[in-house]
Length: 195
Image 1: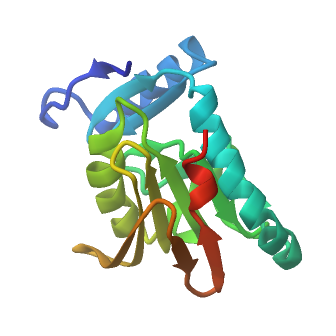
Image 2 (image 1 turned 180 degrees about the vertical axis):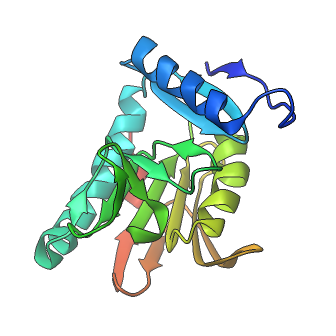
């Protein structure tokens, strides 16, 4: 179950600097959990379940040959840096080139990623489908993939812009999903739903 530690407030009530300070404090206080700033609130999520980890692993198994061939990196424990004033996300899977810009050692610029993946957990659906893609698009994250076993779908968003992602492909889990350039690879989503 996610815990909201700071509710969204007006700028007069809490500045970006103090929110960032609270975020860093909670990262230190909860080192074995997933701490994020989402829509102006600090959220501490439970450690992913075994099934959650299996989904990420099964997706990664399909992507590893392409990542390795191109010399890209799988960055699972790096935060997604959107901009100083925006949220901080810790995606379930993040792929980038080794030359990607880092804001600091723990935060990669969203626009320098190649793929960001979120696997929906019982407490993250609204954030993974709504808040996160909106801000990822603003930050220029080129491909944002949501795997939702509760709804039985995989949603791939691309062509980021000021009004969000301009292109959405949604497939029922079990159907193939093609990642566009620079990937040019089709993912078999069937293994993502096997127990």
